[in-house]
Image (cartoon, rainbow, N blue to C red; front, side, top):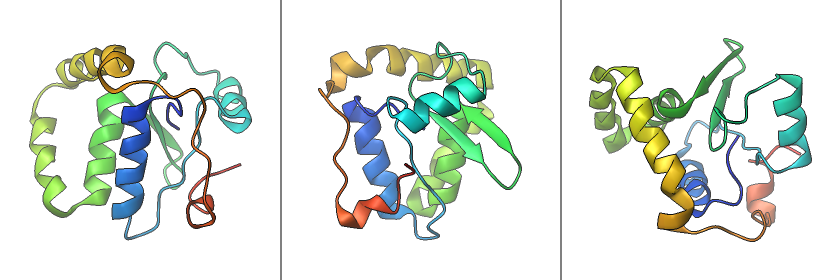
Amino acid sequence: MFDGLCNLCDASVQFIIKRDSKDVFRFVSLQSNLGQQIVQHLELDTQKVDSILLYNSVQNTYLYKSEAVFEIVKSVGGIFYCLLIFRLIPIAITNKIYDFIARNRYRWFGEKKSCLVLTKELESKFLK
């Protein structure tokens, strides 16, 4: 799940889609009907989950903030795998960095008026 109005989040989704060679990721905008249903069903605190949530269906677990980012980087692999060195930093610190970026994401990267319009090629990557 991602913030569909955030340019940084949208660019991140596009980045992941291009590198998802195993075809494991599916995306849902937090602003979509399904996104809101999932948030309500899981009784998620929208203060904690305002920009990213990663669900692992195999382990039935949810990751937030920097933990989600690290797991995505791990799956994407390649040269980006070296970013996992930052896992050596305590999660409390990486989450503070994540929160700082998340708080400023609209100011730094801009905000869309509406969510991404899906092309035929991208449709299979998004849940409805």
